[in-house]
Length: 497
Image (cartoon, rainbow, N blue to C red; front, top):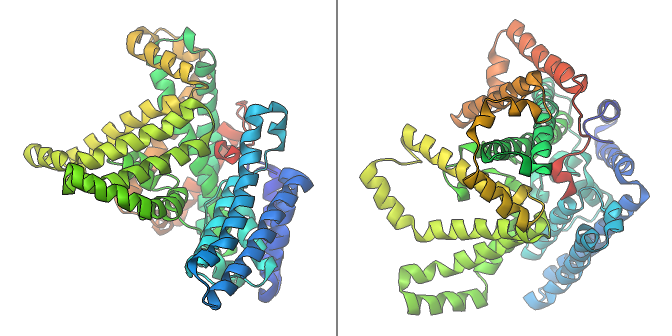
């Protein structure tokens, strides 16, 4: 049962109705039952067994870790439940995620959303170990936290302390909250069905036959791919957040206008925020502050001086974190290089910050202050991201080099006006719809970037204008999405991760 289906909308209507007609004390039970029904439709008994295994092992390990902490056990002793549970669950994740790379027939066994609920479960357990949260004693409530259906497939990755009260307290129906949630859902469907699925056709056509096209068309397809994954992923997250908001669960922010980032590190603070936060809190800081890395930092300060030496710890930890992010995206050499390149560029930026600060002072071009500086920094970051997208979208490292060579050495600019663009899987109407949709996404993000809330702006408008905007959005989804003739994808790109 995909978000992009009539069956999901029917399912959602039934869940919302059942939830709000039930007594408040049992509404969490309705949500738990709905989550398991939803997951059964997605992956059947096999997927349900996998998520139940994670729930049971995390529940038992959480109680074990909590008990050890209450008894004042040593840090080493308290690591035992953490080590056992994380080994079991990450072992399961690695098996299902990467076994298909070696045995293709096992690809059908990939469990929907396994990495997202595994990250959420491990974060919860680590927080118990650190004493940040108390172990949940009710296994069914823990099951709801880990399997809440809107976030199950591609996040956001929530913390127990963020959403537990909303999940279990049985919130009342609220019209303003419902209106806000519906607006997010409509926007999510627009991003996914009108923009992302159209972009996917163009990108797929070019990358499946890239030797037929000049560098300018390949570069254009890289930009469209960047729009595609943003519209696809953020669109799905908007639907998930909107559904949860109607129910009364406030989920964490997962995107913050990533195309307006002023640097690569700023981009990763804006893109898939909950995953970045997870890696920062549970991988980067533990590594950077570990005893071995402290020794490396101490040695580096002796060899290279105080300022340069102290950069080694965070830079090495950044390498490890982005290497892990690369592996999370896939197993190919090009994907691992994608992660490592991010680490190299961000680490280099840390070392070069004093030089960059002097340049900003002399040129008075500051990507954090002046208008021109922000535009320049955003365009520079976008160009860098598009370069990295070659590694993310290609199917092999050899293909990456071929794509880059074609882009740099054989641009063939005439393909922009000789009719070639009409042979990329989209007709003229689809190209116009894709272009207008992309512009609308950037306009909405620009308004948000300036500190204004698009939802509040719409709600403050006259009722007639509100009706026109929402009707136009729904009509575009129907005409240019559902009944457009364009091949729609029932899946989301990040659902495979």
